[in-house]
Length: 220
Image 1 (cartoon, rainbow, N blue to C red):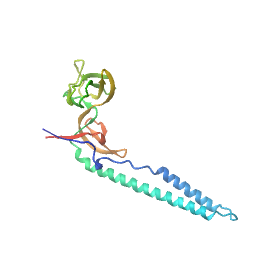
Image 2: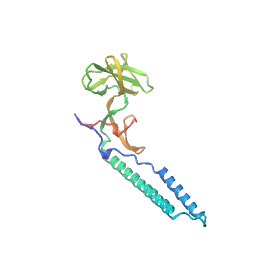
Image 3: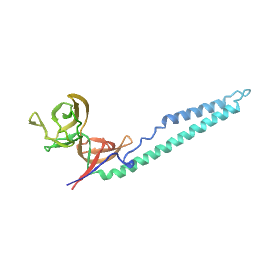
Image 4: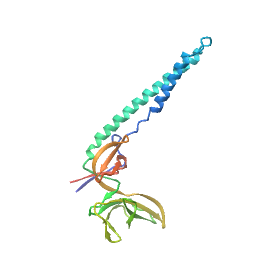
């Protein structure tokens, strides 16, 4: 029995925001501070810096300093939200997620999902191996839903344990109009932070972004 929930968009706690990198701004701030100090140290005693100009420079100094502090606060906030999202999504470990991903053929049919076709169009499932070599093509039905690929190429069984990728080519009036990855369900082995984003490690070692998931289900 399957319990399935479809996700239109991941929740805010599940999606991390990349903090703005403040390294460049910090460097500019330090350079500005050094230039201002040197200017004040080596000013001509007979022609000192105009008080209005000096006040304007101090105002710039204060603004840049405040911006650096603001960016540091935002970076810390974003990191906290990422950790919060990671904690919230830890419950996904052991479940199955539907997303574009390769699959390991283990002898059982691989179930692919696709959208309903528009009139005067058709779609073809293209299967390639891990090296990008095409091994099979399958005409998909016009109605949306699951389609099973049985792991054969020209009538011959493929190697167990091999990794295969799945794409869908859509044709309108015989002309190719789009190509995109096909969705299938995969088992979640691990949830982790990758490049400040939440990533899911699937069975077989494939890593995908949590934002690419369209549905989650558990098997009873």
